[in-house]
Amino acid sequence: MIRSVRNPKVQELRALQRLPKRRREKGAFVVEGSRLAEEALMSGWQVREAIYTEGASEASPELVRALVARGHADLVSEAVMKAASDTQTPQGVLVEVEWRQLPLVSHPSLVLILDGISDPGNLGTLLRSAAAADCDAVLLAPGCADAFAPKVLRSGMGAHFRQPIQTLEWPNISRFLKEHKLALYLAQSWEGQPFDKADLTQPFALIVGSEASGVSEAAKALDPQPIQIPMPGRMESLNAAIAGSILLFEAVRQRNKKSA
Image (cartoon, rainbow, N blue to C red):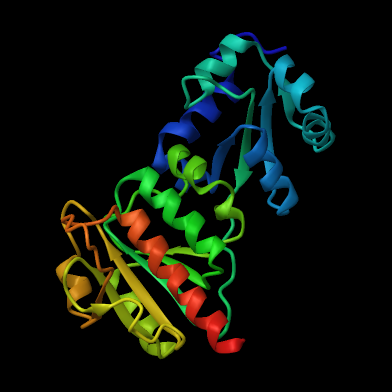
């Protein structure tokens, strides 16, 4: 059992949790808890290292056996797990996963572009919704949070292992849109046509911007068509994650209706 928080393996897991630069350098990230660890294994992502507590071994014996069978899984004390964890109440399992780029489909028809979504919870929720709506890609424009930060991973609830995600500069996003001949919509408050009147059955990309600062000038320069979610309660706006999720599933609804 590892009992020291100064153990090199524990120190490395802590660094991967806390430092985006270290994640980029090593090409790896850390998931916490049995559910995300199971998602990583079931999705076929490569597990490099793992630590677990006796409590996790009792609560999730099959998971722990699977991690041990892959090698590099070590039992640690509760104190060590707490020191390595990013949460106040650790779930007893930390797994280092090798990052890989999920491939894009040849002809994407539903793409989500996130513009300056810096809140990790919102970003994770949008990734989860995109995966649930079977988005072909999520493109992260400048100003977004690190998609593989601990809170984003927890909010994503396993979406990272299924959803193609790419971080791109705006010129590259523009080229992507032109290459795939995608219509472009922009989620706006109180501007544009109602979302249920827009044609979301055609191949398109949707830009969702930050609640705090709105969309960037670079996004506006692409000349997107604004669409809005009518709000009879006259609130100023919706949470970015909620608005993006509603619009994605309006596309799902329209497409299901068209194919019925």
